[in-house]
Amino acid sequence: MRIMIREFHHIDLTARNSFRVAQRAARLVEFDRADDLGRLFADGGPAEWYLLGGGNNILFTRDYEGTLLTPVGRTIERLGEEGDRVRVRAEAGVEWDDLVAWAVERGLWGLENLSLIPGTVGAAPVQNIGAYGAEAKDTIESVEMFCTETCNTLILDASHCGFGYRDSVFKRELRGRAIITAVRFALSRTPQPRLGYGDLERETAARGGATLRNIREAVCAIRRAKLPDPAVTGNAGSFFKNPAVDRPTAERLLARWPDMPHYPASDDRVKLAAGWLIDRAGWKGRTEGRVGVHERQALVLVNRGGATGAEVTAFAARVRQAVLERFGVAIETEVNIL
Ligand code: EPU
Image (cartoon, rainbow, N blue to C red; front, side):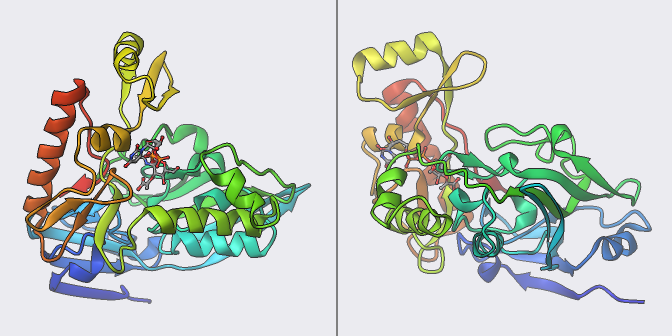
């Protein structure tokens, strides 16, 4: 019988969270497949556990007393083809961008706009990662998961995943009850460029037109220009979500700030750009102590070196308060805070 891959006790998490916060976990178990989880949860499992993928969307504010579970399965496989549709399965521990590169190399469309998003495949459905006019839900066909209550593995069809803007059933009803072990995608051989967002069309044209490779390179270039590299500067991407406000609120704000970016959202609401709100509240590039707002993208908070999670959350609360005072709009965190 195979045994669990690796188990650590009292482990330093600095290298396992992109904010580079120096907290510890009482226990961390790396698992490969659902079988491993079956053994771990056979007798009820750990009293407290949390799924830690690449640690790219998390902020530890204290030592974690329970068990962190980290997927390490890294297989990508083609499941089948039907017409121009190619079905692909990737295990939860695959680096997201390795999957995007794999698809682009094989001429498969659907993931290219999501190039260079840090994190693992298993984390992608949880917050329905998105960028440049695309979201993970556009290509996810189903999600394989281990149910910690029944110890069964099941495949949840995308239509049952409750996908929304940075949201899914895994953040809600299934939180703490399901562990994603693999994700299945439906990709396309037929070109379907989506260049409507920001500078993407121009950056793609500058590279010679809308091929898969050019779109991927354009997205990577835009991201590298705007976002801090977590290998160099601790951060967790967008710290805040873009808020959705009701129409009268949006109209009131637009009357005063006509250049305010705004996009139609569901339920007759209007989505605003949190980055713009923070920027215009005067906080872009501001640093207090060891935490700051990134110079080129106000949505991103950065660890200037040695910051604790508590310092980051205290700073984030001040940013939030500044936006609230200036615009009357409450922005919520996108990063998971533990
Ligand atoms: N803006 C400013 N100042 C700033 C930042 C933004 O004025 O400092 C303005 C921009 O000029 C633009 C608008 O705000 O008009 C929107 O900004 P941007 O296009 O940079 O994207 P975003 O809405 O701020 C979202 C995602 C990013 C993703 C980009 C690109 C969220 C919370 N964030 O940011 O995702 O890369 O779109 O599609 O939805 C992440 O989740 O970690 C992440 C980086």
